[in-house]
Image 1: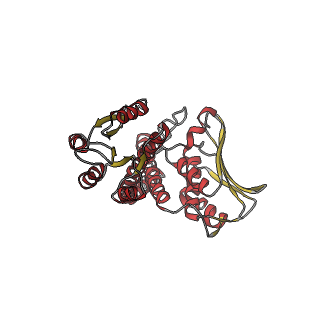
Image 2 (image 1 turned 90 degrees about the horizontal axis):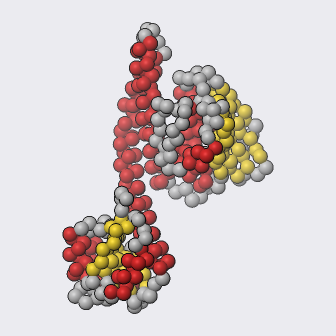
Image 3 (image 1 turned 180 degrees about the horizontal axis):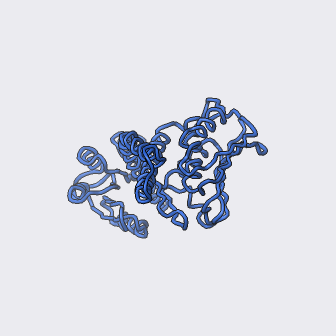
Length: 356
């Protein structure tokens, strides 16, 4: 299995080492090595790169506190967890102050050990994801303008502003446009995801006009009203609600849903956009005719990096992040998002937000 987490357990009690191995050995995401004292543990840590080190505090030759200090200095990326049979407030506080991720008091249950290891793995994954998103956001920002220039130039040629194109030339320009759209989707999604991760989404204190500040500006964008598939956007706005929320984040959702309708919809048809009130919720929906979505694939749509491969979408690329981002934003607004579809005919994406 790829991307395994390498774990080193250091303890002078053989029964502890064997217990840990017995509890954790069923996990396919771990490799486990052991050492019987701090010095042996550090020698192994220098010879092999470990992701997580669990060390006892009180050991002969070299104690766990010295192991912790050395690892923090020489291998700061290693996550250190401590065992202790004398978990006083002072020793725990000192170890955590020195950079220990967590501690496990002896005796421990299998669940206690597993939970701390799980938390350490998740923390490492989140840290790695955050660093990757920062890098991708920087790269995406730098690519945004040149890709947009290529897209605009290709679209100008495609529409015949500099003369009619031959069928072969049209196919070449269509390929350029499809790949530009793919790159723009990736760039936008990574920038959106980076913004979403950095922003505080726990509460919203600003009242916004959902139609005037969110829906209307996106619908009226030239790339939507004058899209290359000649699809008409038809609005049915029954309410113009004011809600507590973040207009910029909700624009990300509306942009994704409308872009998907254009990308996967049937050319020369109508995209129906509705905003209604149903009981104690406002409901926004985007409907388009097109290939639709099989029922068994609907749940997968909102997972990170989920991409469906189905008939009618050949050549259409995406990052697999757009709907995951939408779901995260809507749920932070205490709302829900869902999809309805008749495979091969139509699809309708909707989200609801509670009345303020």
